[in-house]
Every structure is written in C-alpha cells, then in structure tokens.
Image 1 (cartoon, rainbow, N blue to C red):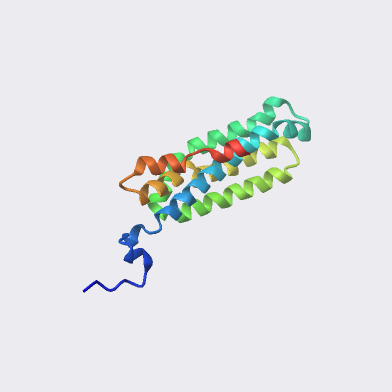
Image 2: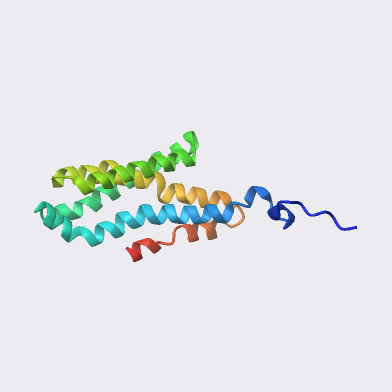
Length: 164
C-alpha cells in the first residue's frame, strides 16, 4: 500500500523542509550583493562627470566619493562579520540597507562636495559593508552546505555593475 502524500508539496517531494527556502535565499543574497555593489561601483562610475559639474569640483574630488565608500566598506567588513554573529544576519543586513539608503538620500541633497564625501564615507560605504558582499556570501553559503562554492559564485555575479 503506497504511503499517503504529505499536504506540503516540498515534504512530499522528498526535500528536506529546512532547506526548502534555499533557492529564495540564494536569490536574496544575489540581489543584496548586486544592489550594494552595483549602486556603489556602477552608480558612482557613471555619475562622476555630473558630480564634478554639480559641485564645481575637480575630477579627483568627484572620484573620491567612490574611493571613500570603498575604503569604509573594506574597513568595516570585519565588523559586518562580527555583527552577523552577535545580532544575526537579518538585523545586520537591515541596518546596512538603512544606512545605505540614508547615505544615498544625503548624496542626493548634499549642498557641498564635503558633505557628499562624508555621506559616502560614513553611510554609503558602511551600509554596503553591512548588506553587501560579506553578509550576502554568508547567507548564500549557509543555505547550501553541500555546494558552498557554487552558491558563492552565483551570489557574487556582478550583474548590476554591468547593467548600471
């Protein structure tokens, strides 16, 4: 006599219910990584001339926005790892998204290049560190313990940098 099917299609298909959400988490990690890095690198790269014109600054000052965001993102990567352990990945990523959003809003309304530089260094870069590469990689690899390399490769495809 055949076994009765479970009402949950995931369980009846033989998939471990703990990992049923894995594809969704991989998509989320891909989106987080691409939004954080795509907006930072892709967005700044195409707007350097507009930034230079808006603030009547030198090209070097306009390009400093990306450099400061990248520097602060790199310096805060260890903090992101520690926050994931202490307060959880969801909270860490939400803090990062909030910081980046505030930073981009500050950039949109910054009256001087100095305020724009501060927003890039103190909000955009740290925010990207808290929801970009490190948290997205932890999220992707945690849901695919048997295929961590493949999951990391998919999560870190820089599609949005190319599109932006």
